[in-house]
Image 1 (cartoon, rainbow, N blue to C red):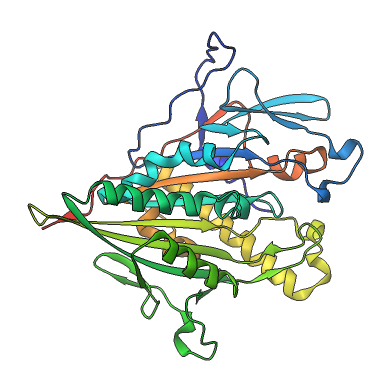
Image 2 (image 1 turned 30 degrees about the vertical axis):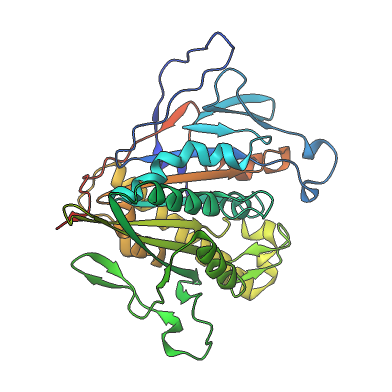
Length: 370
């Protein structure tokens, strides 16, 4: 069982206000090194089945789009996020809410975007999407390239991309197609600029199409499997990392930013997923849940301003150390399957009701240098 991750992000919320149209849409927190939490309720799918257990038990509050209402055993509870997206929400709406944070990469910030949730909750759809409905990955990349094009009179930009996965706490380079290559299993090292991965392939890209092509090729060797909860379950954390270097054409000032787009492996109860009957699946589920627990510990330590942040407790947090602390901006999209049979599993991860995500205030130190 994964410990309460979202409980580590919350603090008491303010008084509700209802606009004249019956719906209050509050503005986002300023993009100042905090952690935002979005909640997205996916539509019903075939795996939800039929009957009473497949009915909606989690909905967006009718009066306030920052509240998720949960009905469990006849009792209603409310959970407060930055935004709650209903099952009818579009990929564009999710991107629009995150666009200012994504654009800060151009200004020299490290940005980290996660999709978090149980197996089958729609994480991969939100992050990657389809050709007809592109997700955060493709929309974010297109937006970055478009913004750089708008600023080309004053700035020049260079883009590099790498794609990695963390499978059973082993870091793999998904752009390295040589399975026999010694450097295909990578280690994280530390330098003056923070964590880095010697030997990882970084490819220079000039268009968003080149980024998408590299990512599509990388996904072909990502670790997936069939579980009792999802026919094509991601068994690894997949990281698409885009490095952006900007140079001011007049002053020579440079900025370096990094966009981490992360499709987390699904958290799950090992019994419900069928992992108890398969030694390989059990090991995968155990490592996934342990890694997600470590992510929660890091977020808690940052929020509590502890002197020691346990970044090195997992490969995921170790690799992302410079994108979770320091000059970092983080968005967690919590994916929820809103039907009755999943209420206990889903909201065991969310913490107490009537709470709001706590901003994690990092030292803002834009990576600009001459």
